[in-house]
Length: 455
Ligand code: COA
Image (tube, rainbow, N blue to C red):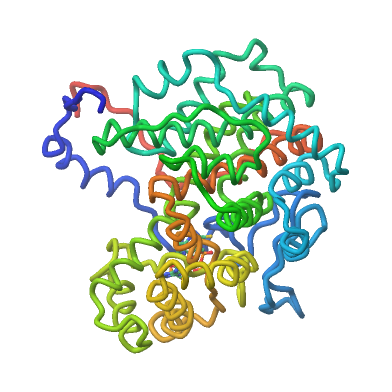
């Protein structure tokens, strides 16, 4: 554990200032409507403000008819290919698909066998971290949060790059492929170091083995005994495919595009994406959803009973249970209405494994949350908007089935989504060429400056 640092600023000392701070930062809700501000970059009907064009990914959850938003089944496609087709083809052919998705998202076409093999070779060569990096950057300075460690390690890799600031497509592509390959190495190593530094357990830094799919590599590096089954690796592979991209507007990808538009370096842009993904309203929801599930099971006598689940969810919405924020994690989405295709695939892929691994109660609890929440939100909030389970409702249970520790839930999301961030950064560099710079209207009154001795 790092040596303890006691902040010289005491919370008590600054808490008296908070009232003034809040007063001077509060903005009348009515002003947002008055000045036509698109809060959260959403239009009045909840649809997202159109901020760009992309050829990489399409996310659909509604269509517009006579100016009205109409709900429809969710659809996700990478470079025009439906995610259902991509995943089901890989299952049918009993092969790993995440590497194919990397190629597809970065280059825009499905890879040939030769191209796929060459990608495996590049990834193998890039999995390693620079000499002494693990010792100097990860072991000597561990973090209680692997997302925090991941972002810091990526920022540190800037110093090891001989050409870090060159934003030509060739150079950014080189950096992107390196980071996509290194991210699982950083994540699994940081987790092992955390085991030792924070949990007092042994850490296992297995030598890197070549020729593995990313899913196999992650399971091998995470487990003490390096052992996993093909079925487990194939489930993780599906999870990685489903998380690889989600359009230009999701918070972390938009953040990456915003930073890219300023002309900054790859390491800064990707570290910012990680910072965004960590948030519980975004990728961090997979940890929160799992905690919520565990809390419900601990507090409800029969979690297979819809009525009991409903009563507990009411408590969560009323901020009397859960994390106190009134959110049911794993439910709701900015675009999807009737269904999130990723959640549908995950639920179907996880069911059998979950039952076999003894997680039947957990699976049924999640199913009940999915069933009960839409009606409950309509009842309590009077919101007629369709709401469905999102990818984070079932992903945590999948990780539990795979014996993956909670510390790695969101970092695993990052290890997949880094592909999307890189693809969108490359698209921003090649197509947009304009700094993203929206406007904020000032609602302050003008005031005359008061000299220090007159205040
Ligand atoms: N639990 C409780 N309330 C929810 C909710 C949920 N899961 N999802 C939406 N709502 C509420 C919102 O808080 C909002 O209420 P308000 O008007 O009183 O502020 C209202 O419903 C409108 O929400 P909507 O426009 O559909 O959501 P959004 O686009 O602003 O937010 C999410 C989308 C994903 C951030 C939101 O659904 C959420 O916070 N879900 C839980 C976190 C989560 O699972 N995130 C992972 C996303 S993949």
